[in-house]
Image (cartoon, rainbow, N blue to C red; front, side, top):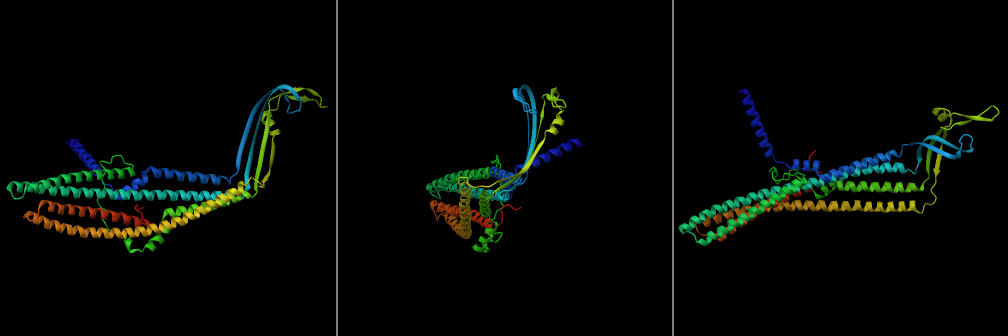
Length: 456
């Protein structure tokens, strides 16, 4: 009995968890965070950051010595020189040689130092680029999220309007049967209900498409069961409109990633000029070489007087390796004198790119200023449009209520009454449209002020 009770309890818990999973609704922050973690474009940009980190390791490695080893084994058959006597004779010999060399840059026109500084800046620029991509995705997700909310509420409006007209249709059919209203009014109501069905289908399709767009940004496949919360309100929670455009612009210059990217690229261009100028300076490189060899051929044997008396077996491998070793070390100085204007052209080319980078920074600052002032104006206009639509909706609601009373007592025909309903429906849609337009414009303005959509 207890076993059956436990099984039943587990079954009920599993059903509850299943229902809870099916009814999960995504918040805006959850959508943004999921998109940032899973978006394909962001993953590609992350790989660019990893590449920049690898390039930095390569730039640091230029300060370290280079060490290389070599070894070879050869067979010589026929007439060849005896390495011991220097005489030519027919013989078959084997030789093993090995060596190693070490070299290090002592001075290279500060190119290594500037290359490392450039690599550090490139890594910073790659991180900024990743952050910019995350910000762009966050804004796109916020826009798509608000579009789904708008389409959900718009569908509710259309369904409510359809339900009202269907009730009106039933009432009109009764009135026609009673002879209280002409049959033409009934036909008008039927046409209105048919139009409501079309509006509902259009709203459903718009909602489905908007959900599909949002789930694609999130890299989700099951968009049909995807649902979001309805928590968003048309409210300036951070009181951003109390700021002046100039204050927002000054803040944006400190926080906007796109401007930081341009400024970092300008610093990279300056390092490229310094690296190119290093091509005019001498290069000094230190080196050390070690080599030795081993022969497997019999060697001549001489008596005390120096007379050749025969041959003897070669000395052991390591004994020969120690006796035959040689070393060399020193420094190599390379002074550029004429190289077909390549160094000069590199400097001039890097200076041109530096000027381009300066122009990009100036353009980004101008674009940022224009965008901030535009966003502020749009947000103000969005607020005014939303407030005006609320006033218009209230007036349309009162007009509809009055028309409904007149229609009920036969003082208004069905055509005029339907017009009143249509105007009310349009006013409701205008409120929704202006509401979410205002919310998104506030998000844009907060974005420029340094308030992220995704809280850390």
